[in-house]
Amino acid sequence: MEARAQVDEAAQNADPYVRTERRQYLKSNLEAARELLDGLERDHPDATALHTFDGGEEAEVDVSTVRVWEYNVEAEVMIYCYEDHAAARQIVERAIAINPESASHHGMHAAICGQLKDFPAAIASIERAISLEPDNLGYKRVLNDIRQEEARVAAEQAAADKPSRWKSWLG
Image 1: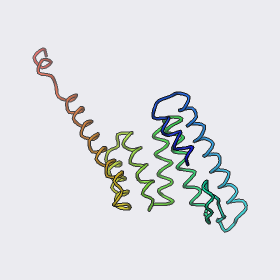
Image 2: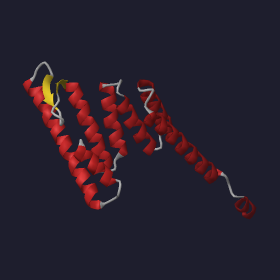
Image 3: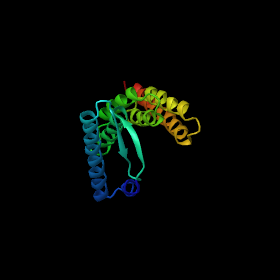
Image 4: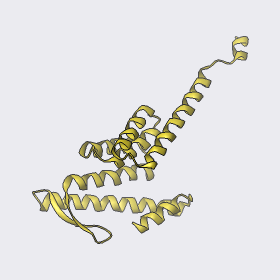
């Protein structure tokens, strides 16, 4: 996790080298998630296996959990590597279908929908995340940000739709 945090922090500085490093990190995690999932499906008909996490902690993991991990990483790859928010949205929606009680999936879905300017879906998703984790201030800030962006876009659209009085005079 520490390496990822360093890559994330450095990526905010818009260094092209670091953005490339983040892409490579995300792609390698996607490959690892897929390998783990393939192994679970192949080696464990009961769909569970013992997994060792980065910190050395071990836990019993089922296929749906690993599939959700794969979807999360795949969505990040689509966003950060290919800037394809529509594809990322579909991927996160698959993760939500598997685990509808995950606030983080709903939060990610809200952020993606916000980027796509689908504000009703973004608000519904972030409100669901807040209902699942009511003490999470980050989700409450995201809701505020989405509402502000929605108002800004609506104001721009209203201004664009309003004919100029000069234009009407010139007819």
